[in-house]
Amino acid sequence: MALFDILTGSPPAQGVNSARATLDSVQQHLHRLFNARRGSLVHLPDYGLPDLGAIYENLPYSVVDLAQQVQHLIESFEPRLSAVQVRQLGTVGDDRRIRLEISARLDRLGEVGFQTVFESAGLAQVRGRTGGGRHA
Image (cartoon, rainbow, N blue to C red; front, side, top):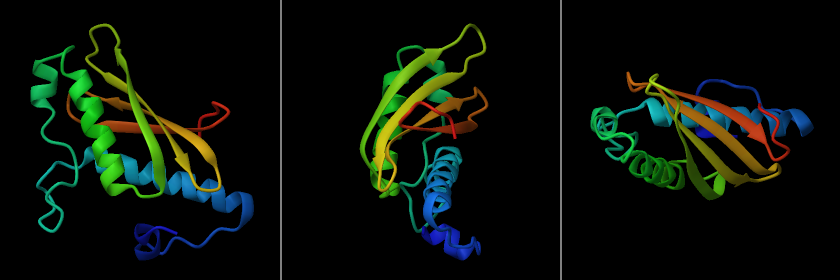
């Protein structure tokens, strides 16, 4: 169980529900991590992403940099995930959304993945999937 889950009073889960609860907890943490801005937490100055304005100004060349930053954040702040890989899915049309696919290993679940969409306003949406490609 993650510290955040303990602090928010989330009940401990058992068995299959426990694996699902862990996946949901990781997904929620990634959502908070990607929507936080670096420097917003005094006690964790490297938590979160920098302002995404520069990323959007330099599209499409800056997507690789964003993918690297996302991978570094996960490796630094989400210890339940290992063997993290982030690849760009690119932007679609003129909507200026950046899509990244995150794959990693999660204890008890094996291979998991998350698709993250960054909006031009800087907000991130995170959807999860299990190794079979099913979305959480």
